[in-house]
Amino acid sequence: MYASREDIGYDFGDDSKVGSKPIKPNPNIDGGWAWMIVLSSFLVHILIMGSQMALGILNMEWLEEFNQSRGLTAWVSSLSMGITLIVGPFIGLFITMCGCRKTAIIGGILNALGWILSAYASNVHYLFLTFGVTAGVGSGMVYLPAVVMVGQYFQKRRALAQGLSTTGTGFGAFLMTALLKYLCREFGWRNAMFIQGAISLNLCVCGALMRPLSHKDVNEKYVVRRNSENNQAKALSHSAETLKSNGVISEETDKKEEATNEEVLDSVKHVETEGKSRSGKSMYGLLVLKTASQLTVTVRKGFGIWYSSYFGAASLFTNRVFVAFVIWALFAYSSFVIPFIHLPEIVKQYNLSSQNNIFPLTSIIAIVHIFGKVILGIISDLPCISTWNVFLMANVTLVTCILTLPLMQTYISLAVICALIGFSSGYFSLMPVVTEDLVGTKHLANAYGIIICANGVSALLGPPFAGWIYDITHKYDFSFYICGLLYLVGILFLFIQPYIGKKQPQEKSTEEEQV
Image (cartoon, rainbow, N blue to C red; front, side, top):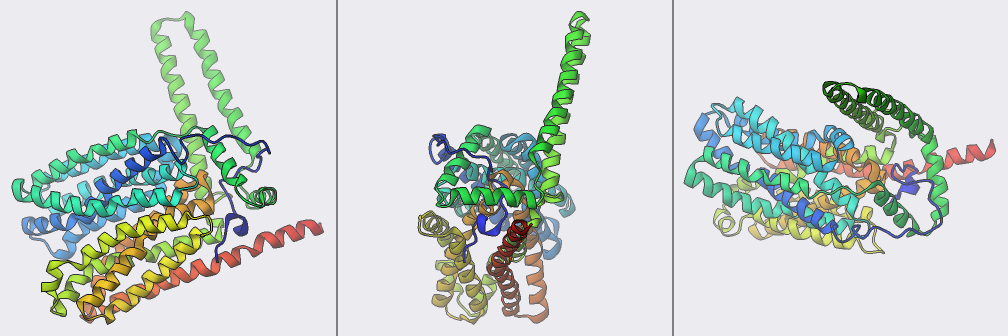
C-alpha cells in the first residue's frame, strides 16, 4: 500500500553521488536547535492558525458594526484563511531566494500591519483589503517557513516533530478565542485588533529562531537517511536514472549558471579594482552596482529553480502520486471545516443545546485533534510503521465519520463521531512528512506550497458551497454527503496512483537494457 520514493520512480531530494564513506550527521538534526525550531513553529500555529479559528468572535462584531449581510461579512474571515494557504506556491519563491528566516520576519511585519490597519476599518470592503489580503499574505509568509524548517531539521522524528508543532492550532483556538472575547468586551473590537496586531509582531521573533542549516548539513542529512535503507546502491542508481528520464536540471546546467554568475561578479570586482583610484563617490557607486548585481543573480537563480519546479522539465507535476496528492487536498480541508459550520444547527434541530452548552461538540473535535496529531506522529515514527499507510487510514476514518455524522441523532453518538473526527484529522501533521517523502527536502517548500494552496481553495470555497446546499435543501445532510463523496474520490486517487506510477520507470529501464 505504501509507495516509497524509489517505487514511485521520482525523487528530487536525493543526491545521486554519495560516497561509501560514512559522514557524521550534524548534532542539530533531530536534536539541539531542532527543538527550538519546533517551539518556533508551535508559536506560529498559535498566533496564525489559532487566531483564524477564533475569528467568529470578530465576525459577530463586524455584523453589528457594519450592518451587512452574513454572507458578505463572512468573506472577510474566509479570505484571510484562504489566502494564507493559497499564496503557498508564491511564498516558495521567496523562500528559494531569501530563505525561511527572512521570509518569516517580513511576513510577521505584514501580518501585524494587516491587523492594525483593520482597526480603522470604515466598511466591510476595507477589511477585504487590510485583513483578508494583507494579513492573509503575511500569515502565509510565516506559516510555510514554519512547516518547512521542521522538515529540514528532523530526520528520524519528523512525524512527531510536525505533530508537536501543529498542536499549536488547537491550543491557539482556545487561547485566542478567550483573548479576543476579553479584549472585545473590555476595549472594543477596534482596540482588540490593534492589540492583536502588536501581539502578532512576535511572529518576527519566531522567524528569527529559524536558523538555516548549511548546505553541508543538508547533504549530511541525505547521506544518513539513505544509509538507513536496505537497498542503498540499487536505490541510488535507480534514482539517478529516473532523474535523467524526468528531465531534472542536470549538473552541467548548474555549472553553466555558476560560471555565468562568476563572470558577472568578476566583472564587477574588476571594475571595483579600477575604481580604487577614483574618488569616494565612485567607490560608493561601485558598491551599489556590486550589491545590485549580486541581488540580480540571486533573484534570477531563485526564480529559475522555482519556475522549473512548477513549469519546467523538472516540474513537480510529472510525479503522478504528487498530482493525486494535490487532487486529494482540493477536497480534504472543506470536509474538516464543514462540521464546525453545521454542528450548531444539528444541536439546535435535535434539541441538544443544554448538553452541548456543558461540553460543546466543537470543543471535543479541537481537544481530541491535539492528541490525534501527537499520537499519529509517534505511531508514524515507529520503524515498522509506514507513514503513508497511517496517513491513508486516518483519511479513511475521517471520510467515514463525515458520511455517517448526519445519521447520528443523540448527543453521545455525535460526541463519539466528533471525537473520531478530531483524532483522525490529526493526519494534518503528517502532510509535510508525506510531501517530503514524495519530492525530497530540496523541493519541500515548493511542493508543500502547492498542497496548502489546494487546501486554501478548499477552505475558501468549501464553506460557501456547504451554505448554498443548505439554503437550497434546508437540510445539512446533503452538505456532508456531497463533500464526503468528493473527499472519498480524492482518497481513491491516493490509493490508485502509486501503483500506476511504479510501472513507468520499470518499462523505461527495460527499454534501455534492450537498446
